[in-house]
Image 1 (cartoon, one colour):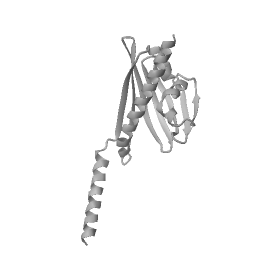
Image 2: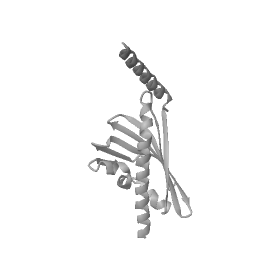
Image 3: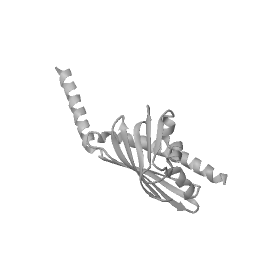
Image 4: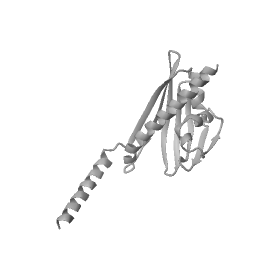
Length: 179
Protein backbone atom coordinates (compact mmCIF):
# COMPACT_ATOMS: atom_id res chain seq x y z
CA UNK A 1 0.00 0.00 0.00
CA UNK A 2 2.88 2.39 0.79
CA UNK A 3 4.40 1.71 -2.63
CA UNK A 4 1.14 2.67 -4.34
CA UNK A 5 0.91 5.91 -2.32
CA UNK A 6 4.52 6.78 -3.21
CA UNK A 7 3.90 6.06 -6.90
CA UNK A 8 0.71 8.13 -6.89
CA UNK A 9 2.58 10.95 -5.15
CA UNK A 10 5.35 10.86 -7.76
CA UNK A 11 2.78 10.78 -10.58
CA UNK A 12 0.94 13.72 -9.01
CA UNK A 13 4.11 15.79 -8.70
CA UNK A 14 5.07 14.94 -12.30
CA UNK A 15 1.61 15.95 -13.54
CA UNK A 16 1.73 19.19 -11.58
CA UNK A 17 5.20 19.96 -12.97
CA UNK A 18 3.98 19.29 -16.52
CA UNK A 19 1.02 21.65 -16.04
CA UNK A 20 3.28 24.37 -14.61
CA UNK A 21 5.70 24.04 -17.55
CA UNK A 22 2.79 24.06 -20.01
CA UNK A 23 1.46 27.34 -18.64
CA UNK A 24 4.84 28.92 -17.86
CA UNK A 25 6.39 28.23 -21.28
CA UNK A 26 5.98 31.16 -23.67
CA UNK A 27 3.58 30.85 -26.57
CA UNK A 28 5.69 33.26 -28.66
CA UNK A 29 9.29 32.63 -29.70
CA UNK A 30 11.52 35.55 -30.68
CA UNK A 31 15.13 34.76 -31.38
CA UNK A 32 17.83 36.69 -33.20
CA UNK A 33 21.56 36.40 -33.73
CA UNK A 34 24.02 39.03 -34.95
CA UNK A 35 27.42 38.95 -36.64
CA UNK A 36 29.79 41.55 -38.08
CA UNK A 37 31.07 40.76 -41.56
CA UNK A 38 34.10 42.47 -43.10
CA UNK A 39 32.37 43.01 -46.44
CA UNK A 40 30.20 45.71 -48.01
CA UNK A 41 26.43 45.54 -47.61
CA UNK A 42 25.98 44.88 -51.35
CA UNK A 43 28.11 41.73 -51.15
CA UNK A 44 26.40 40.43 -48.04
CA UNK A 45 22.99 41.28 -49.51
CA UNK A 46 23.55 38.99 -52.51
CA UNK A 47 24.29 36.07 -50.19
CA UNK A 48 21.08 36.63 -48.25
CA UNK A 49 18.50 37.72 -50.83
CA UNK A 50 19.35 35.19 -53.54
CA UNK A 51 18.03 31.79 -52.49
CA UNK A 52 20.63 30.05 -54.66
CA UNK A 53 23.28 31.66 -52.41
CA UNK A 54 21.32 31.29 -49.17
CA UNK A 55 21.11 27.53 -49.74
CA UNK A 56 24.91 27.36 -49.82
CA UNK A 57 25.51 28.83 -46.37
CA UNK A 58 22.50 28.09 -44.16
CA UNK A 59 23.00 25.31 -41.61
CA UNK A 60 20.13 23.16 -42.88
CA UNK A 61 21.67 22.70 -46.34
CA UNK A 62 24.63 21.00 -44.67
CA UNK A 63 22.35 18.92 -42.45
CA UNK A 64 20.60 17.26 -45.40
CA UNK A 65 22.75 17.38 -48.53
CA UNK A 66 20.27 15.10 -50.34
CA UNK A 67 17.36 17.55 -49.91
CA UNK A 68 15.82 18.85 -53.11
CA UNK A 69 15.44 22.64 -53.50
CA UNK A 70 13.23 24.47 -56.00
CA UNK A 71 13.24 28.23 -56.48
CA UNK A 72 10.12 29.71 -58.06
CA UNK A 73 9.63 33.28 -59.17
CA UNK A 74 12.54 35.60 -59.88
CA UNK A 75 15.23 34.81 -57.31
CA UNK A 76 16.03 37.83 -55.15
CA UNK A 77 12.67 39.57 -55.60
CA UNK A 78 9.48 39.89 -53.57
CA UNK A 79 7.35 36.81 -54.13
CA UNK A 80 10.26 34.47 -54.86
CA UNK A 81 9.94 31.15 -53.05
CA UNK A 82 12.55 28.61 -52.01
CA UNK A 83 10.89 25.21 -51.48
CA UNK A 84 12.61 22.10 -50.17
CA UNK A 85 11.97 18.50 -49.39
CA UNK A 86 14.36 16.20 -47.59
CA UNK A 87 14.50 13.31 -45.20
CA UNK A 88 16.20 15.29 -42.42
CA UNK A 89 14.90 18.81 -43.11
CA UNK A 90 11.32 17.86 -43.89
CA UNK A 91 9.23 19.81 -46.35
CA UNK A 92 8.77 23.55 -46.41
CA UNK A 93 9.08 26.87 -48.15
CA UNK A 94 10.57 30.31 -47.56
CA UNK A 95 9.03 33.30 -49.34
CA UNK A 96 10.34 36.86 -49.71
CA UNK A 97 7.57 39.19 -48.46
CA UNK A 98 9.44 42.48 -48.28
CA UNK A 99 12.87 43.60 -49.46
CA UNK A 100 14.51 46.92 -48.62
CA UNK A 101 17.70 46.72 -50.69
CA UNK A 102 20.87 46.32 -48.65
CA UNK A 103 18.99 46.88 -45.38
CA UNK A 104 16.08 44.53 -44.68
CA UNK A 105 14.58 41.20 -45.73
CA UNK A 106 11.20 39.98 -44.43
CA UNK A 107 10.23 36.35 -45.14
CA UNK A 108 7.49 33.83 -44.33
CA UNK A 109 8.71 30.34 -43.39
CA UNK A 110 6.19 27.51 -43.72
CA UNK A 111 6.76 23.87 -42.83
CA UNK A 112 4.52 21.25 -44.43
CA UNK A 113 6.19 18.30 -42.77
CA UNK A 114 6.92 16.56 -40.56
CA UNK A 115 4.67 19.01 -38.65
CA UNK A 116 2.89 22.09 -40.00
CA UNK A 117 3.96 25.49 -38.68
CA UNK A 118 4.82 29.00 -39.82
CA UNK A 119 7.25 31.68 -38.73
CA UNK A 120 8.30 35.19 -39.68
CA UNK A 121 11.98 35.41 -40.56
CA UNK A 122 13.98 38.61 -40.96
CA UNK A 123 17.43 39.93 -41.78
CA UNK A 124 18.60 43.42 -40.89
CA UNK A 125 21.81 44.77 -42.40
CA UNK A 126 23.62 47.87 -41.18
CA UNK A 127 26.81 49.43 -42.50
CA UNK A 128 29.37 50.16 -39.79
CA UNK A 129 32.80 51.54 -40.76
CA UNK A 130 33.09 49.50 -43.96
CA UNK A 131 31.69 46.37 -42.34
CA UNK A 132 28.18 44.96 -42.37
CA UNK A 133 26.35 44.05 -39.17
CA UNK A 134 23.81 41.33 -39.93
CA UNK A 135 20.98 40.39 -37.60
CA UNK A 136 19.03 37.25 -38.49
CA UNK A 137 15.90 36.50 -36.52
CA UNK A 138 12.66 34.60 -36.27
CA UNK A 139 9.26 35.09 -34.64
CA UNK A 140 6.79 32.24 -34.23
CA UNK A 141 3.75 31.43 -32.16
CA UNK A 142 3.13 28.06 -30.53
CA UNK A 143 -0.34 27.32 -29.15
CA UNK A 144 -0.57 25.29 -25.97
CA UNK A 145 0.44 22.47 -25.53
CA UNK A 146 2.93 22.87 -28.42
CA UNK A 147 4.43 25.90 -26.67
CA UNK A 148 6.65 23.54 -24.67
CA UNK A 149 8.48 22.83 -27.96
CA UNK A 150 9.63 26.47 -28.06
CA UNK A 151 11.72 25.83 -24.94
CA UNK A 152 13.57 23.04 -26.72
CA UNK A 153 13.69 24.79 -30.09
CA UNK A 154 15.44 27.97 -28.95
CA UNK A 155 18.83 26.40 -28.28
CA UNK A 156 18.80 24.45 -31.53
CA UNK A 157 17.83 27.54 -33.53
CA UNK A 158 20.54 29.62 -31.87
CA UNK A 159 23.17 27.03 -32.83
CA UNK A 160 21.86 26.78 -36.40
CA UNK A 161 21.69 30.57 -36.84
CA UNK A 162 25.19 31.03 -35.40
CA UNK A 163 26.58 28.33 -37.73
CA UNK A 164 24.77 29.85 -40.70
CA UNK A 165 25.98 33.36 -39.94
CA UNK A 166 29.56 32.10 -39.56
CA UNK A 167 29.30 30.43 -43.00
CA UNK A 168 27.77 33.61 -44.47
CA UNK A 169 30.65 35.64 -43.03
CA UNK A 170 33.21 33.26 -44.52
CA UNK A 171 31.62 33.34 -47.98
CA UNK A 172 30.99 37.10 -48.09
CA UNK A 173 34.48 37.94 -46.85
CA UNK A 174 36.00 35.52 -49.41
CA UNK A 175 34.01 37.23 -52.18
CA UNK A 176 35.28 40.62 -51.00
CA UNK A 177 38.89 39.41 -51.15
CA UNK A 178 38.45 38.29 -54.78
CA UNK A 179 37.96 41.87 -56.03
